[in-house]
Length: 322
Image (tube, rainbow, N blue to C red; front, side):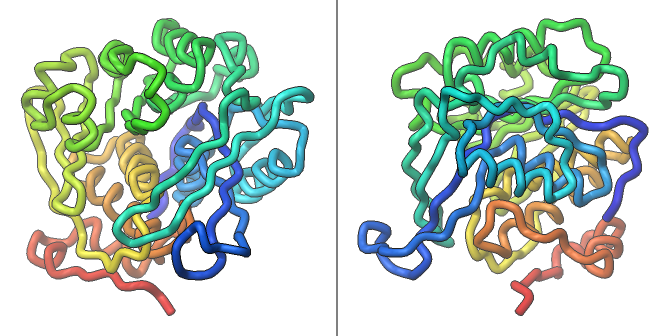
């Protein structure tokens, strides 16, 4: 599954080092840890690169070992990281998670991080001439006042390229901040992606038609219904596409993978059903691994399924490769 686009995608937001227990069992009993990286926007950028889309990740990291690891990992995945500032004073953010197929509780250590100091001046590091899309998420709005102003600056700027906004609700980040700002941010975007459950938690509505009434501004609204599927609301029409059956190893990162698959197909001018299938297929690659970003599924799997009839799609069952 590859998409050739004339311009690149800029993904803007924080990425942190991640510590995951290296052995099974309760996280508090862990004595050894595996270091990885995690960040919604860089996850999207990596998936886009694997789909053949030129992607850039714009952010800030600390001048520390974790920051170096983040830059090596994201850049090593084929993403342009030249727009990332290395902050000499503030640290790279960190979070610790317990991997589990039913969900992965996390504890954040990101207050005062390098990325939390980003503000509207971050946009000065962008090259605007070849941008096909700017991708942001609601996570950034929760990091600091300056990060919220950065998102507002992105969305207020005269559009030379559309902006996609993924709600990415993280309740732990909003304990000391007002999530009411998320509605204005979402309504100012061109493409909005939101899980029905998280939209219900934030706005009190999760039904696609009700969300469209709440957010009349975006051209395209994508509502994810978990394993059941996803819906595109666009131009007065609504298109639902069931999800794939997947043997889930761990769910973290699947939403970012879905966003990348969907956005790549959207920018390629694909119709709604094909866009949603591209999202589901890319999400499956993340569901089949403990990493936030899994390897993309092989073309032998994705290409036939993109255009399969509804019965073949419904019968597909993706299992972990051994």
